Image (cartoon, rainbow, N blue to C red):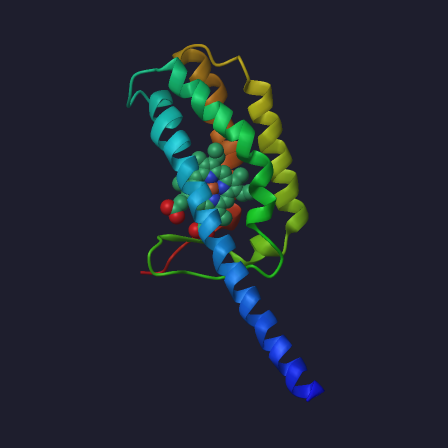
Length: 152
Ligand code: HEC
């Protein structure tokens, strides 16, 4: 009886873990899609002369990054590796879930660079000067380390 209960408890725990992992993987994808919206599709396009400079949109994007940066480590929990999924071109590498201290350090650097930029992006010239290196050193650098393309 005790044994049956134990097996049942272990199974329930396993199911809960699987649910928690798919939740965190979905949450990470949603999180990065918002980053695409504010980052790649807005401030980066402005900085590359692909859309007109808009101070309100820049401020909104920078506020979004400032509010959300601290959540990044929670998107890479230990043991959370899932691998490629059908509906996404990218997936997070296994080592992202192992190198917790590096993810933490990258998050702190990103949050600091965003905080340092506060109030300093006032026109297209300052956007280019501040955003382009910030993107390279934070977004692209982390993608090079931990983002993989799904094999086609
Ligand atoms: C700490 C590391 C890290 C940082 C910092 C980071 N990313 Fe990501 N990003 C990832 C990883 C890992 C993935 C792949 C996640 C997945 O598919 O599960 C990803 C995925 C993405 C995607 C693809 C989403 C999709 O369609 O599947 C976009 C767009 C993106 N990031 C934008 C950004 C932008 C913009 C920034 C900076 C403002 C940024 N990221 C900062 C690690 C990071």
